[in-house]
Length: 201
Image (cartoon, rainbow, N blue to C red; front, side):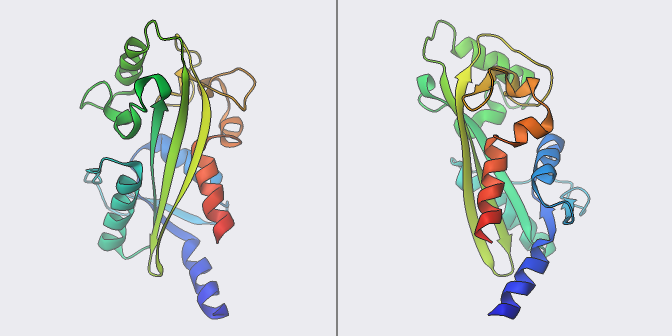
């Protein structure tokens, strides 16, 4: 049992990230132990778009990690994240990356969200991440979420996705796009999912 645990931890120190989004790569690496060897899908030779054909964050996260593990036989870590707006019945949710159209452009998605929220008083929303880990000893998923408010206009030029429209309840009134990487890491949905995974090891 002890040997299996040691082997598993050693394998975890070498991970392939099942994402081709450089912003996600930056945030995930920042939340992982600094001495771990983290390789991106592109660096591992996977240049095709990773599959995301499900209708839930859980399905997509596992699908991407499974895909890399089957291709490379290396432990793979993936996340799928979405912005869930209360007044929009949880939309855009799993379709957050293409809310404004199939081109998956952040600025187009934000503009589409602002149009959908015109005249809406209830601005409550949450960012949610499902983290999937697939390795030779099995697979598991972990979640992280952060609640906040949708702004009436963009604020800040950092971050990515919907960060410039989202003010977390746990913050000081600034949007995610106005925070440094370390500030966002302290409360973000992605960091919370990663901490849940690390705590479970």
